Length: 369
View (cartoon, rainbow, N blue to C red):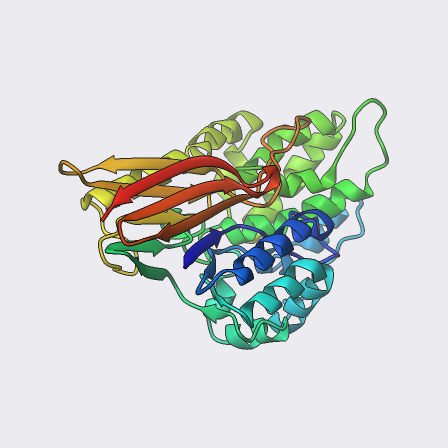
């Protein structure tokens, strides 16, 4: 028996910028599902943001004004029901989702919703997952498993990120604006000599606000200033920024905010290690974990907490299967991380693996009963 964990795949629709490419990541995911199915009593935990449902929904208002300000044919759009969105995601990712459906008929598959697919843990979520052919996939707000004599607690991790902890925190608004305003604007631009613009790169940026310095590199002078004005106005109309904050916003001030947001993975790690120590409570009130696994930050992390003599506890952040960028032109990180936890009568073992590199071991943890 083994527990396999992945997070942050960000499967989306064909009409949107793609963070998960089914002909590439989908084939790797199908291989993973087939391998899990061959074992006995294995379980796959999908630790949040597996489906990018927030990207499918447009901002509440302001798209028409954004389009007029930049001479781009963009208009306001209504929110869409979840079942057709999930069906469209299935159609755009047939390799991954057919493999997942098949695995769910042979082994236990559990989805822990994240901030991008939190809808699946709410009213109507079960019906939406069923619409994608995943009626055998279980939904849990967090996964708590007893492995040997150890507690393994698996949470997506967005509850500690103020912008993503709730639907109104700002994260969903930024995602909607990037997908339904910024990327259509970039796709509409005429090619620029000597500067390659990759609109899909925008949604790979972490943190998302890094779009501002990246676009400084891509856009011509004058166009960038017009974009910033229209972008800030759209943020204000949808409650992401106050009017006063928008007046004060400059590329320099936004860069200072980026530095703070860049520290998210470090803050998550410190908080998780505090939870392992027992000095900070975990959302959902699970048992005190021996192994705590999070996703959300898109940055892999691994920390061992040394307790009393002979006691070690493990924190893992899984990173993401989606491509990640932090700049305008450099190579994107395409690692596909997987956590495997297994045990025998004497020992628990945890391996952080890279599925892209012949299941190369990145980190290893062993602890005796």
